[in-house]
Image (cartoon, rainbow, N blue to C red; front, side, top):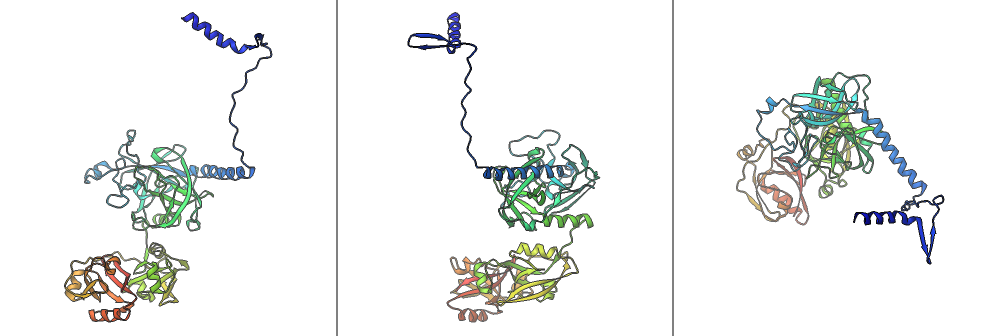
Length: 508
C-alpha cells in the first residue's frame, strides 16, 4: 500500500509536466514551464473623489489620535479597604466599586469602573477602580469623573509612556460628577486643548479616547447624537449624547472634535450587558472646565442661584402662555427674598434668555444661572402675558439651606368639580401645616376621578391649586366661578406638590 500511494503521489506531481492530446504524449520543457498565479477577485472600483473624502476623514482620525493620546491617562483608585469594610453590602457591577446607578432607571449603566461581567482582573487590582482622565495642565492637573476617584484611598495616574504619578490632592464635585486630580507634574507631559462644547452640533464627528477594560490608548469614533440630555444620574446634567463606543474604563476620558479639542468628559453609557450599545453620555467641556477652574482656584464650586421653580414649555402650555412650544422655561413659583423676587420675576413669566443666551430647558437655565459670577448683573429676557420684557438679574451665592422640599401627607373632604374630575377643599391652616405649605394660598385637591382630564394631567390628592387661568384662588367658589367662564375650553392651573410648583393644562 505504501508503495502504491507513493507512485500515485509521484504521478500527481509529474502530471502537470505532460499533456495528453489525441493519443500523442508531448513532454513540457522544464526551461519554458511556469506556474499560473492564483486568480483573485477584482477590487471595487471607487472614484478618486470618493477615496479622497474617505482618506481625508481617516487622516483626520489619525491626526486626532496622535495629537490627543499623549494627554490621556489611566487612573487607578485603590480605595481604603478598611473604610469600605464598614459600609453595608451593595450590589456591585464593577470590580470593588458599588453600582452608582443602583435604584435608578439607569441601574444597568456602567460608568467606567474596572471590569465587566464574566471578566476576572489580574491581581493585585481586584479591589481597585480603573478609569481614564485627560491632562489639562502639564504642571500636574488631570480632569476626570468623580465616580472614578471617589471612595478615598490612593489615586495613581499612569501616562501613555508608562510613567506613574501619585495624586497629591483630589478635588471633586459630585453634582456634576467632575473631579480634578493634582500631582507633581513634569514639563514633558502633554496637555490637551479645551474646546467650546456649545459650538458642537448634532451630527458632528467626535472621537472618544480612554482605557476601556484596562486596554491602554483606545480610540473610537462616532457622532454627536443629541445635546442637553438629562438622564437622572447627577444633580446637574446637560450631557452630550454620542454613539462613539464608550465602555467600562472610558469614564473620565476625553471626547474630542476633529481639531483634537476636548469637548466633553465621557461619563456614562446605557447598557444591558456591560458593553457599548451606541448610547453614551459626556459632560460638556464648558461645564467641566468651569467646575475644574473653581476646584483648582478655591477647592470648591461656588454657585449662584435665582430662586424660582420652573418647568418646560410644552405645546399645551405654550398656547396658554403665548410663546412658541419648547421655547424658554415657565416660572411656576418665586421664592421670597431671592434674586428672582428682587429682579421682578412673577409666576407665569417665561424666561427666554439669560445674559443673551437662549434657554429651552430647566437644566440649561439652572446651569446658566449657577455659572453667573456672584455680584455681577445680567439681563433676563422674558415673555409676560404674551409681551416681551427685559429684567435684570443680580447674581447671589446660593444659601446652604436653599431648596428644601415639602411633602403632602393626606387629603380631606371637599367640594366636587364634576367637569374636571376634581374634588377640592379650602386650604386651612391645619391642612397647610399637614402639607408643609404654611406660606401657600389656594385650594387643596382632596380627590381625583379615575380617567378624568385631571387624572390625565397628572393631578393628585394633596396638591394645592393656587391659580386658575392666571388668577389667584383661595376658595372653592373662586375656583368654580373662573372655571364656569371657560366652560368649553382648557383650564390653566398652577399647582404645587412635593416636587414644587408647575403649570397644568386640564380640559374642561
